[in-house]
Length: 268
Image (cartoon, rainbow, N blue to C red; front, side, top):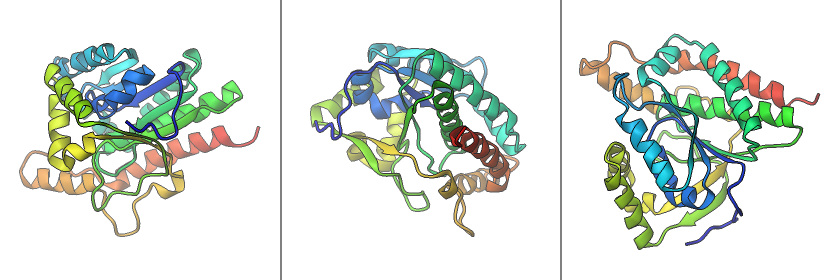
């Protein structure tokens, strides 16, 4: 296993993911760092279905990590509705709450889902957590390092990741352990199955953390379409959705969170 630019110890480390099961992407790193784990949604459209959240909490415990105060709080459809309505207030409020969590838990390093223009919940959580880390850093008077990791394999239409800051290359036996973890927690095993279809074992064999790209580079290029728009169009055509979530819905939220972040990093 190659740890690249190795970190030592897990005190003050936070992993913030959008959906239960994302932590399987970094299971070896989690076992080493033992972070506080935060999860935005239940991973279900049914409020009574906590299967994925329970599996995610059990997995965190099995890896020596700790479930945090935000752990499967919102339904996916609730967060999508905020995005469809262009509502920035819930995300701004979450950023404020997260900043308090980071301060209370003495966070020094925060890892979050990357911005990939693949899933809007991943993207907006990415920016919410970044804003929170910036606000907590300002209040603390010293920087909280923030990194991201690829949730899904890179594909055409996705923005490039920032420079790699930590890289773990897993041995075949460690990949097998990751697959065994997925089988042991069937509530979130679908996450690994989806990744295997998209990127194969090679994607599971790498766990990488990256420097964040500037907020000014996050918007899709003119004329480009985020992947979640294409997915939405296909679902509308199939009669599964009634409307397509577009970048124009998301842009006001990105602007609000970006302003929140920039205000936190401006000189006092």
